[in-house]
Length: 132
Image (cartoon, rainbow, N blue to C red):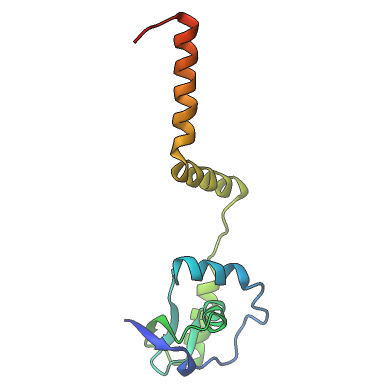
């Protein structure tokens, strides 16, 4: 079940992750795009997954945060889910990231390609004196 939860009501107990790392990039993303992946809590509003997202939301001054509520309250179940949520991540490779940014740039600036295409056409028209 997805709900919006009041941030001050979320209980954060002992976590595996000791260092949240640099949060500014995540905070900037959340400012621009919102929260793409909800945090995970149980019915007691105990955080199971998403401590970096939660802390970023707090620092941004958010009062509520989207959350998925699951029915897991046992210490072992919560620990398994916390590990699972953080274990199977894979960052993009340098090439994947470069290709993604290149595609994004082409979508943001489609006129650049058209300008080059028109210049090539004009060049060949002049070269071969083709009239339209």
